[in-house]
Structures are given as C-alpha cells and as structure tokens.
Length: 141
Image (cartoon, rainbow, N blue to C red; front, side):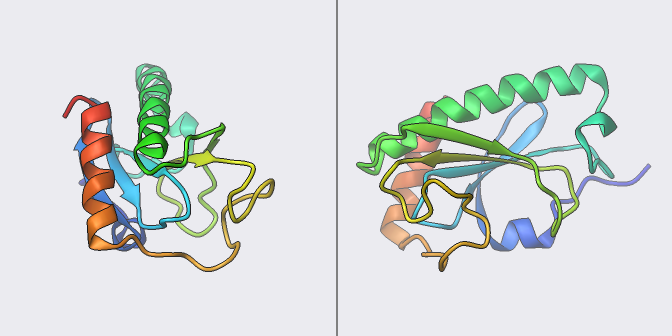
C-alpha cells in the first residue's frame, strides 16, 4: 500500500496547522485571504469518491469545522468573512485537497475565483504567526 505524502506543491504554498481525524490542515500562504487547505490522509486519493463513505462523511464535518476556523481567522486579521468558498479543483495538483477560503465583497478578486487572479501576497512572519495561532485556537489545538 502506498504511503500518504502531501504533494510538494501544497507544502511549498502553505504552512502546517493541525492534524484532524482525517485531514491535515494547512494555512495557505496568501495574505489576501483567510484560507485553509484540508488534505485527507489517504494515499492515492484524487476524487471525493476515492474515499470510503465514512471518510466522505468525516471530510464534510472537517470542512465545516475548518469553515468556522476561517471565519475566526478573518476576524483575527480584521477582515471578517462574509462568504466561505469551498473548492476541490485538482487541475494542477491532483492529490485530493479542499480549499476553504474566506471572502469579502472588498477582496482583491471579488466576486470571481481566487485561483490564478492577481499576485499572491506572502504572509509576513508576524502575520503568519498570528494566523497560525488564531487557527489553532479555533480548532482547539
């Protein structure tokens, strides 16, 4: 059986936050948005239906949990979330992963998608540490 490994492209663009029952949670390195990525720890999973039914149910619960954490993160950063975007694209990184992005009507990409829009703004060390702490608190970690 293959070993679970996070795709290097996900690792290069995000920071580890927590380990939930099914998924690893990572903070996306883009200061424009409160943004988490969940990666179910199932080797070879590409599509939602690659997960067992019980894992699909767990993933939905973890996505809701992460959504609350993204809202807490937005508040911490002084940009309260007005709308949550949940997405599983996989066109560039086929490994099954879900984006949980906090959006606002005044954000850089509103109302369009965040992918491939504008330039990524990397988190400063200070903002990254504050964001990681806020997400960990929201996740109870």
